[in-house]
Image (tube, rainbow, N blue to C red):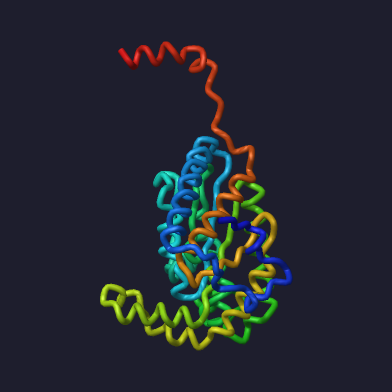
Length: 290
């Protein structure tokens, strides 16, 4: 099954409402799982090489509406990674300490080391997505010249988007490979998933009354996502809109895009064996076998 990153790439003329939330592949769930396992194995091998090479880090960001499947996708796509080489961060409400720093500070701290992956479950984009819908959040940052919601002008958001672009440009130029995924689900699919959280006792804990209120703002969220993604998708930090009504399919597409991007870095290779080891390889093997 062929999926290419260009088919899901967000460009300057991106229109979110015209993006598919599902694709008819004629593949069964079992076939999709089998294909994902194959891609995961390749990613696991590439991760080991990245770790040994130790010159690049990889930052992968996931955004999406509530119940879009971020948690399970992260679990399934990165299942075959060596645990020492990948760290997942779930960004919730900022702590008191985090609010005493600029909005990017806690994300800087979570960036990957050379040779490792960092996965952001929600990301620095919350500061220009949910905050635009609920601008009172910004007041918690105690910013100079921002004393009320009326002080938060359209220019404020343009400046913040520019700061995010500068942030991603800087880390990219310093060896971090950036990929950003929007898990695109339909409003009806979200309804079905929220209902399942209520119907299944073991899923009740995932439901929050706020989910119902946020659904009423669906169109506002679409407008903000579309605008932000258009303005922040660049070759060094591209956005991809992933059809996500079918969880198995979205996981496979994301995995294939990550694999395609990583394979494009042809300089990522295992480091050469030192001269000393190369010259004495057989001797070391004999000693160990003895």
